Image 1: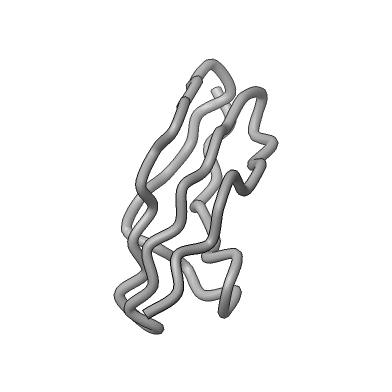
Image 2: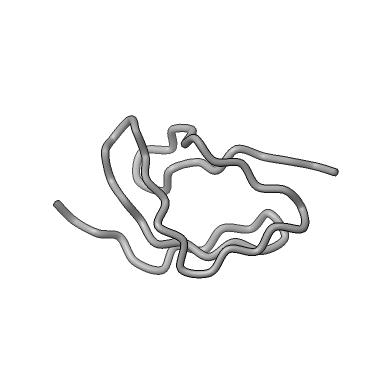
Length: 56
C-alpha cells in the first residue's frame, strides 16, 4: 500500500496528514502548521484538488 504526505497548496510544505491509495477525502479542511493557512481539498487516488483557498 503506497502512502504520501499531503503537501500544502499554498507554501508546498508537508502537513501532518498522509494519504493512502484507497483514501477518499471530500471537503477536507487541510491545515498547514508552517504557513498557518487552512484550505479545503478533495483527494482520491493520491490526487489532491483544491476547492477553495481561505484568506486571512
